[in-house]
Image (cartoon, rainbow, N blue to C red):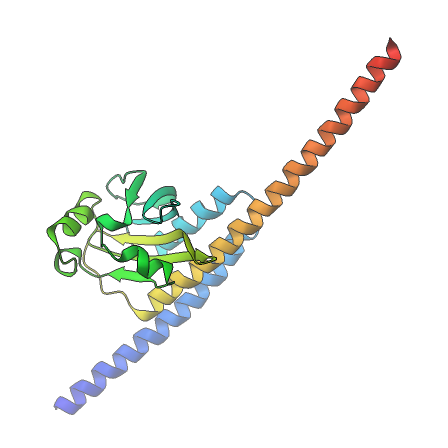
Length: 212
């Protein structure tokens, strides 16, 4: 009987992983379709946050920009659903003294229950202050520096599955690529607009000089 129960449990777990992998691929396709026509970096981030909040049934998805000191971080885009307000600026060291080191090494960080997993009362209080019991953070590292974090939060304890973490890593990579593309396109548009303005200004000055 014990063998049968174990076999059934393992089979159910395998089926769950397979279903989550299928859902992951379907979500990534939906995300690509959604981001394709967007040209504003903020719209790219916001659309991604909304989709991931709905898909994973979490209270918040956010993008944070890291300060030069590699400890402070600022909220730059977020989508939440019933989440407590979060400060615009915080410090990684408030949540774990070595969190920044892990992120700089490119490590995705997750916590399943802050009340039991966070080792100190100071760290537990930091999570309570923003209404978070569980979360995942995916880092963006460029030239050895931590420059951004894409994260999701849950207000209740949650055991994150491997497909969910893989999905968040895939989404982070795609949204950063989409934001870079959007920012490059905006820069080109601004450059073209400045060039056009200079031409118009030169023509106007020349015409004004001829009129005199």
